[in-house]
Every structure is written in structure tokens, then in C-alpha cells.
Length: 286
Image 1: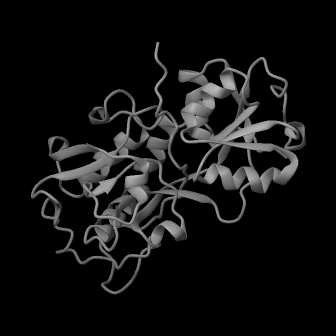
Image 2: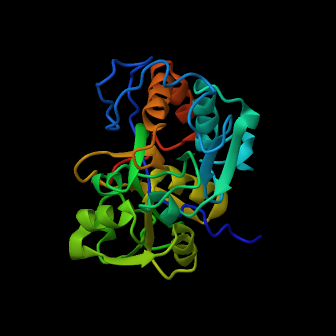
């Protein structure tokens, strides 16, 4: 079976979502950095979307645990999240249209072909200069994946992996996390997509691969069953959080953030994390 090339090809992720509900007082700001909307501005189904009555969502190729089957299935963490946000905004399932975009298109400073994008995009200050983010919906960690029969299968500490060739996704947060964790003690090998790195791991070209831990769990159980997640890297600095991406200064940002906040407050996000993500028991490498 052909392995899905785009698997795990995105910046990773993570997010403790906010616990705010309803419309905030005009002039205040959410943690996503956007003014809170008035009730009229977020009237269900009447937002200034690219196409009237339609919520256009950008994503790349679907893979678990974010998308199970087609993106329209509503199964998988981000597919379910999108439809929950859409419902909060007043859009039915059939009112959501998906468009194919690359990760570079999502974070580039250019006009977007979508109203929002859901593709495990880590919120960073640098990216904020080019795009808007919703309130965060997940806090994530960077996981370390190794081959079951490789020399590092028993690793429990960072020191156990010293001297290894460690794959990362170029221009993603896994690169910074790996360099912060090991410095020069490992050889960091960048790949254009994490799926390429996982194939290199399976073939013995690298000894380990660093990526979002939830992606890593899916990779080792669904796509690359000859591998395992041995632990997560210590968090360098602020926790990594994932957010929905919108065009810079989008009129929708505050309303989308409000929807995410409400889903956190009513327990929907917690339920989705429990249903679709399986990384809570992965230990941190000391």
C-alpha cells in the first residue's frame, strides 16, 4: 500500500483552549489578539465569508488523528472541530466547503482562498505578522519516534539518544525543539515533510523522528507500525498551541475565536481530545 506522503507534514501543534463564552464587550481582546465582536457581528450564518452562506475551510491531505477518511466525514479531531465551530457560527454541515491548500499557503502573507484553515498550525509571533489565529484549541508537545528494532528503542532520556541522527520537518517547530533539547549532541536531519522523515526512519536512514506527539502516535500505530513513540521533548519556552488560521485582519477572526472559546467552556473540545487523541500517557524524556 502506498504510504500517504503528506502524513504529518505540518507544523505542530498544541493548545490549551480558552474558557470564555458569549460575546465580549467591544474593545476587549481575546488571547488570540483580536477585538471581541458584538452579538450582531457574529449573527449565525450571516458572517462576511468568501461566499455568502458558505464557510470555506482550507486543509491539506487528510491523515489521522486529525482527519479520519474524507475531510467531510466529521471524524478525526480537526474535522470534528471544524464542524463544531461551523455549527456555533450558524453553518450546517453542507454549508462547509473544503479547499486544498499547502501549509506554505496557509501561513504565507497572501490573500487566502479560505475563510479559515485547520491544519495543525502552531501559533507563533512570527506567523502572527502574516496571518490571524483563532483562540488556541490544543496544547501539544513534540514526540520522539524510533524504530522498534533500532538501537534507540529503549530510550528513556535525552542522553540515551545522543549521537543519533534525528529527523525533523524543515521550517517547523520540531526543528527548534530538537535543537533546544540536544544542541550539538545529535545530528539533526531536515525533511520537507514528516512523512518523508518517517519513511527514512523505517528504512534506517535516520535513528529517530521528532514531530507533534499526537501525529507521532498515529504514525506509529496506523501508518508506520514498525515504529514507536518513546517520549516527548521538554517544552522550550512557552507551550506550543494550535489555532485555526485566517487571513490577516480578517473580519471573521473574533467570531471564530469566540466559537472556539465556547467549545472549550462547554466541554466539547475536551471530549474531542479524549475521543481522537492518544498521547496523554507518553512520558517526557528527562
